[in-house]
Image (cartoon, rainbow, N blue to C red; front, side, top):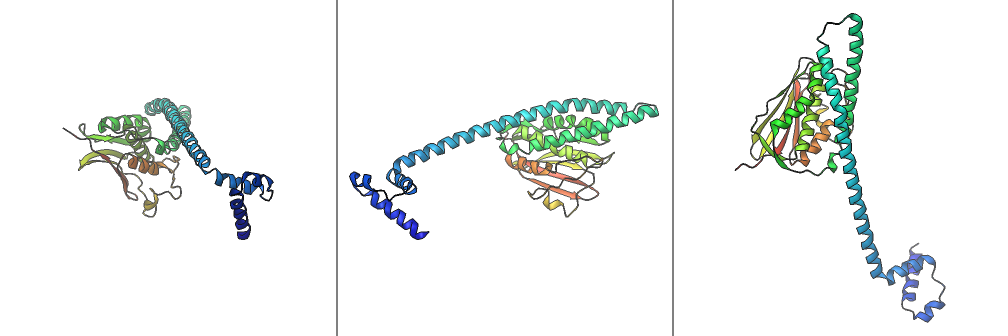
Length: 294
């Protein structure tokens, strides 16, 4: 093979230095050699062609990324619209659960309640998959009030928490400000509170807190649920494997929740960590850049 390549390059070199009349007489160069020879002779055109190809690919890549972002935005809006009726339905179920029903009515009601909870949990799993694509979303930092965003997230998941008998409390002060992407922060709160509800028993508590810490704001979501086994804890934020487990009411999940939150925290200029004791509960903490004050 080496000898063949050497001979081919030698033929091309000879051909390149021949006068045009002599080139027309030569027939020893095969089509492959002709192709290589053209590239050598016309190096400038090859560079121009390569440059155009790179520009074309860059344009196609930008177009593709824009289409993916548009798709992700559509999916997020669609999932939000699908979730709204479930919030109302779960709230209605929670109210009806306090009513006195006949045995037949209770049996039918329990079927409706279980089905609604199962479908809502499946919807949340789809939302988690969509949120996992947030790495394509460019962070847009702005100054915002954490308490308002946290309260919106707590209210959004309130019906599901009440139906399960879990109390969710917003302990974030009204004056805590951050300079980060408001949308990403809201998604993180929804992810973490939803995850905490999933792994907390009836009568349990979930508390969202935030406090200033130097140049950052430290946010935490704590629960007194089932906790995380010590051998599982180190792998939760890694990329290997799927850590999906069923919740205290048999809720299913994707196993992506905490990994998605890690990506979101880093995109928002912060870090994330998990502290947990099996049987006692879990606290997930992350940081955000603090807003500058005058």
